Length: 86
Image (tube, rainbow, N blue to C red; front, top):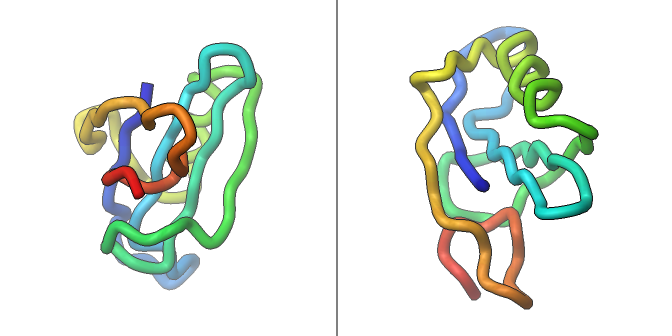
């Protein structure tokens, strides 16, 4: 499962977009971006559980459940942090 959201402007961060990627067997990644464009992330965090990743995004970026946009999982061999496969 993958989903992304745009953050609300804040003086506490300069991250305009985040993505959550829940893998089949390796936990959950939260990718942070320097742009709203579909470019590689500049940082990431790893969590054991989806709820922990979602709570992190809520706490630090004020992202609510209805802010998320669901997207397809990455195709095998493609980057996980990009929406369109390259």
